Length: 217
Image (tube, rainbow, N blue to C red; front, side, top):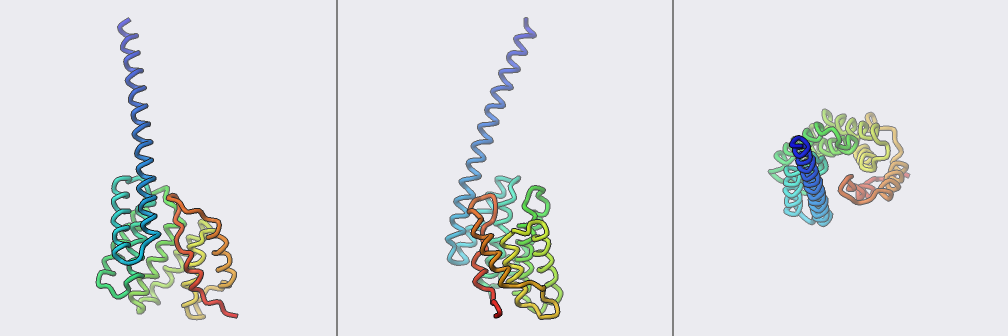
C-alpha cells in the first residue's frame, strides 16, 4: 500500500513538473517572439548610426538570453556590418568588423542556423572589408564571390545571395567577372523578394539593392 502511495505521489509530482516546464517554455517562446518583433521593427525604422547601435545592442541582449537561437546572433552581426556601410569614414569600423566576424563565427557553430543566409552575410562582411580597404580587393574578392556562390549552392532562391552577388559582380574587372546576366538576376531577385514574408524566422533585408544594379543595354 505504501508503495502504491509513493508511486501516486511520484506520478503527481512528475505531472506538475511537466506542466510547469511546458508553461515556462511557452512563456519563454512568447517572450522571444515579442522581443524579436520589437527589435526588427526598430531595425526597419533605422535612420542613423545611433539607431543601428541601439538595434545591435538589443539583438545582442536577446542572443544572450536565448542562447539556442541563431537569428539574434545573425542580426547582431548584420548591424555591425551595416554600421560600416552607414559611416565609411568612422574610426570605429575596424572594431565593428571584428565584432561582426566574432558573431559570424558563432553562427557557423549553430547547427540549425540557415547556412545559406549565414554564408550570404559572410559575403556582405567581406564586401565591407574591401570597401574600407580597396587595396585588399585582389586578395578578398574571391571570398566575397565564394560566399555568395556557397549560399546559392545551398539555396538557389535566396534573394539576398542573388542580388548581392550581382551587385558585387558589376564592379569586377572583365577577366574575373562572373558570366551572369544582370538583368535576369535582378528580375529573379525581385520575384523572390516579392514572395518572402516579414517575420522573425528568416531575414528579409536587401531588396533595395535591386536599384543599385546597372543594366547594360
